Image (tube, rainbow, N blue to C red):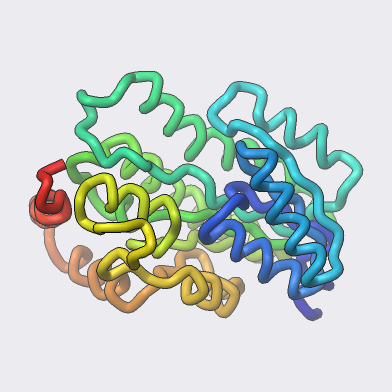
Length: 273
């Protein structure tokens, strides 16, 4: 089967307003699969969807949903009830703050857990049965190198990304023999608008027009993801992150935390925060 036959006729991409999510949606559409684009900002989503439809000719649908709000999954299920979703991509849930745990509100931490853990779990439970019954489909859950071991300034974020990685691996173990490809896509620093804004705010970049040092281009992330859709359960993107993962696997958990703590301190930039 080609991509459209295996993963169509519709895909749902959560976090599709910019960065990797928008690029992923574009690549899916170029492969002949219709796309539901989901994020919080309706006007931005509509603009992205119009561009994708004009360039590729596929059908698009937009859903403006705050994934941290209770009932988000029910809203998504209702809005896609007339569609056959064969491909689910969950790339929402970045952490724009990079601040100490006690300097952030409990509400913010709980929202991170809900958005990064509960909602992908719920969406997979909703959409995977249809894929299994058809004997084909795909699920991509975005993780992060922050989930390799605990470190400062990403307490809730790192913990949720560890959940995402193990969740994707376990889901693969159950579903890959039933025709459903599952990939936990682990990213490191990626050149997205969100990262540029964060590093500009922290004084690392002079302008959001600059490329963050060491960041992997979005097109490289998407290319590696599509080349490895059948190579789950875990795909680590970028040579630097693969080397880091291999090294962290060779030391104790305590040593891994110490190394990540040192790296986080070095990443604070000249402003110290």
